[in-house]
Length: 518
Ligand code: GLC
Ligand code: CA
Image (cartoon, rainbow, N blue to C red; front, side, top):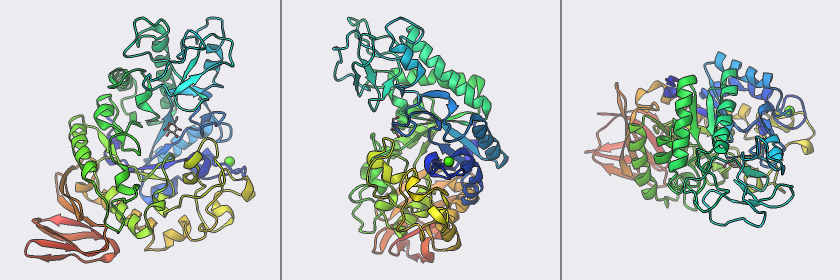
């Protein structure tokens, strides 16, 4: 079951900004199909596409209007099917983005639900009994939509104002309240069945699974996520019956919970308890050469989660970034990024590379927000392919592009130039991916043991056929460690050399090594 996850290595595509094939300034599905070879050549064998469904794009497509229809600006359902087929032909897999927590207020379900007359969508969303009744402090409800519709009541929100919360019921239901529904009431159950139908629809067309948006948000007033966990376990059981190969990765950021819920993988994220930002994105990221980082909290939580994930036979995903985070290149310089990738690509679990991070694409200062991006907009600029007009992203006039490009730098930072330069971030990432594939000890399921949690960072990866040591010194000074028997060097960044003397290894400034264990 889901054997394809054993060697999966993901590339995240923000479809708006990847490749435009019809000159309208917005990326599209034909563009994704066209660029699968680029992704494969880098070494990734799986993609996650951000929502590509019909939407008014108040939140870049995370406000779905019709779950069964590709947004016309990206193409047609046939075009998406073609992406699945082209990916499969290359032994690649495709995850779509499922947004189960909320819809756009323009979704037909919501329009029906907002009518005063009772109909089959009346209970699809969470409505109070009076428009004046908008209670504060109910976990997972971010606000209320009040007025504007003839139905009496206020409707719960899950994120922005245009994203009304679907009704999966309340875990701690207030018994005295007659508008809060139980998880097993007909309304919440029919919402859940609709989500299963959406999954069936795309899986039967060829999708390989879903990245699940705000996976922890479904059941309300559920402080320990017990209701939401039970709900996902039910969905996993349905998948195991009907689509056993389908994989789910959660945007949850708390593997202890999400993996219990039946997700095959969970992301470490910029929010939640994981301390993920300490790696690449605090004031003092660990991988910056000033050596001021501190991963104590990160490792404490990671080790605990790693044990739980192994027991549940599921995986932790460390992303280079995503469409919600400020790009790594804003915090780390190119050499620091190469060392960060030597870490990311030697950890267990499933690595995720955000499009353009393999080039060191920069966070772009944009004059204003685009489609609900706000500060996230600068991380969503068009992919830089080559030195032609608009860096090969689109033939549209530059002022018609979805988001402004990194015009100052795109003649240097682009896929074509970086592929030709053996010292580029791209070349380093491609080398590291090739090593990960070649060495069984670096595979997704091979075991992990932390040996030194600071500078230098040292851990052991073990498979059935080999044991490797990874030793990383991001700092600008020599760093030594006593007590490991390191053998042959199979990888070193910048061709640096490791000193070994009487059981002490010394790593030169800014270096990373993969070593055989002796
Ligand atoms: C997730 C998405 C983010 C979106 C939000 C609401 O966090 O990654 O982009 O805005 O959910 O759906
Ligand atoms: Ca287009």
